[in-house]
Amino acid sequence: MEIPGKVLLYCPLVDAKGTHATLVAISPQGHYQLTVTVKGKTHTMLVPVNQAALLFAEPEPEVEEGLPIER
Image (cartoon, rainbow, N blue to C red):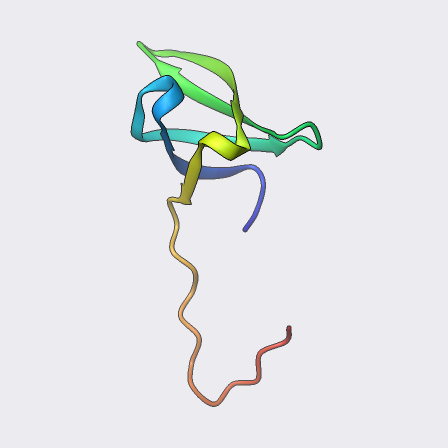
């Protein structure tokens, strides 16, 4: 996971159901800082972590079997 990163936002608080956004930061105060394009303009949103789900738009790269994975 890299920040900033393209994500899909699911949050009933703001009626977001798969809304495209960019995750800019995760604050220690408990919110995601996102940028969202609405009607051609970019807006910053602060969404509570405990009321939202984020799905990174880019899938994780496939790992070939037999290759050692560092953890």
